[in-house]
Amino acid sequence: MNKLEDHFGRWKNREEIAEAMIPMIGRLYREKNVTTQVYSRSLVNKSVIQILKDHRFVKQIEASLSENGLSVVDSFPILQEVAKLDIGPSRIDIGKLAVAYKKDDKGLSLEEYVRQELAEAVDQKVDLPGQKDVVLYGFGRIGRLLARLLIEKTGSGDGLRLKAIVVRESGKEDLQKRASLLRRDSVHGPFAGTIAVDEEENAIIANGNYIKVIYANDPSKVDYTQYGIRDAILVDNTGKWRDREGLSQHLQCPGVARVILTAPGKGDLKNIVPGVNHDMVEDSDTILSLASCTTNAIVPPLKALNDKFGIEVGHVETVHSYTNDQNLLDNFHKGPRRGRAAPLNMVLTETGAATAAAKALPDLAGKLTGNSIRVPTPDVSMAILNLTLGKETTLEELNDYLRWVSLHSPLQRQIDFISSPDAVSTDFVGSRHAAVIDAEATIVNNGRHCVLYVWYDNEFGYSCQVVRLLQQLSGVEYPRYPKD
Image 1 (cartoon, helix red, strand yellow):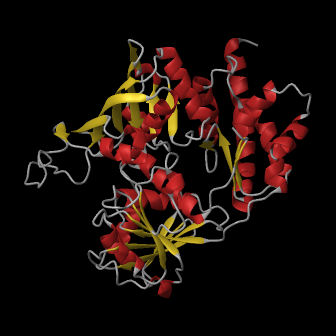
Image 2: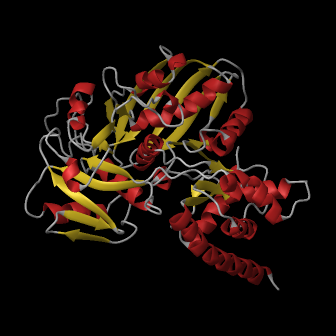
């Protein structure tokens, strides 16, 4: 057989295997709340090609793999064994299990190995917390992406459930327009599923999720219990109220138990960055802020570097996509420079991310400065971390460490890693990580001076961080296997 036919034959074989994986992945998710992953990348609702690409991606970042990388040929037998188990809600990384099994020298059969690694998930099943109601207050860029994520993660229905969105009515076609904006997105593409509207009941039905659309101008005047909503977590993504007094209006409403703000909080509000300071959350906290998209992007890599090398001083420059608070054409704006046309200009502006980073990482207080340049792109931004480290390092050591962090540390859901000479901003649209380290751009000079280039989807990656906090607050945070 010539090389052409050999490569094509192997490709068709891998396609066939990926096709066989899809129903197994779906059943585990719907029936057992088990999310199947490959190196932290979920395979739930993925196509054949997406599954193959997720496997292929691992070769770029896992240095311990052979030249052939990771294939569905390796992971499919693992999935088959997982499907046989009476397993509890969990996140199972079949990619990591496959790689670890190749290295295992105990002489175990594949069945024995999988049962051993997942024994805890079988013998000590996590109790489902039951359905937890979620309300979205506001339905803009972040609100609609949160809706997509919550609908996608419905699973068996025993976890987070989006029950309502609250907006101001804008006319008789309001409901249809809201549904249409959820269905189509110029940046993130079409909604993955079906959407219908119930005009009589003012509701959107998305992939079977019945979502009440509530019209209100006053955040303190809604009785959510009349819509069957109890003890809900309300996500305020309007940014209109950022302090405890303003956001407490939501808690006056029957049916609301806690509030999350998708913007930097003011006053005594805790600004949480999942993966970094989420341990600050206490049962008594009823209002929490998730800080900003930039804060969520820079704090995880800053923590990783500070833990390993220490940070003496640094400057954060963000190259940020334009947002709705800027003008399309030159016009009055209360903020400096933001009145100039966003699609036509690079706009120098301020960012509070450096100060906010110090709130999440007190060790960095007084050590960071920051600025921002808004640029004419609709999504995906970059943070440039210009740092003086406490210990000397090399380019290779620094990149190897950050690669390890992205694969095996507690920050693996926040930090991704890529080494590609042709990566550009649109490649990161839809990234579920808060930050992506661009290894090809990393600079180390004189041992202790480094510059990191960090990509982040300032819409979708941030929304994923919001969902992670929602999962923590609701108890829908299932254990991960294998244990790192």
